[in-house]
Each structure stands twice: as C-alpha cells, then as structure tokens.
Image 1 (cartoon, rainbow, N blue to C red):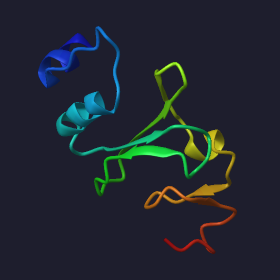
Image 2 (spheres, helix red, strand yellow; image 1 turned 45 degrees about the vertical axis):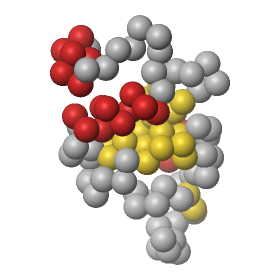
Image 3 (tube, one colour; image 1 turned 180 degrees about the vertical axis):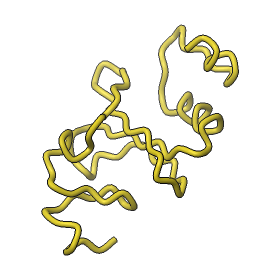
Image 4 (cartoon, helix red, strand yellow; image 1 turned 90 degrees about the vertical axis):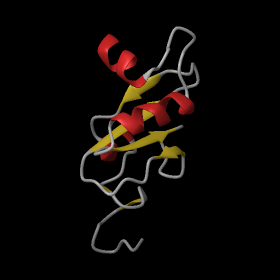
Length: 97
C-alpha cells in the first residue's frame, strides 16, 4: 500500500475521499472505479467511466470508509446489474441502457 500511495502522490493520513480516488484512477487507467454511497443502484457517487471489463467496485459508508464490493449483484440484492450503466433489474434480457 505504501508503494501505491508514494507512486500516486496520495496522502491518506487525514482520510480519503473522491478526490483521492481520482488520483488512483490515473494510476489504474485500465480499471473502471465505481463508488456506491448506498446499497441501491441509484446511489452511485463516482463512476470513472472507463470502458473496461476490469472494475473496482467500492461502498462508501457513513463513517467515510471505502469497502470493496466483491459481488455487486449480492451487495445490491439484484439478480442482474448492468456493467455499462450500473442499473439493476431482474434480467439482463429485458434491460436497456
């Protein structure tokens, strides 16, 4: 972690936020970083909008901590979540972005 912080020039001694994520996004250019502010599809606080299958999905909690989301469908209690627009529905067949 120290190498990542030094490489990106990021100081987390006073915590982090969206501005720190923008620095990480510049370092992880091949990843799409999506931050959810809650457990609903419409609760997206930040979306790096990088066209990539590689994603980093995070949950930003009320204590201002980031948590990794291993399964977006599990976290949002949806059977399908579109990788393009992050909207959830019952089936990918019926979804339109």
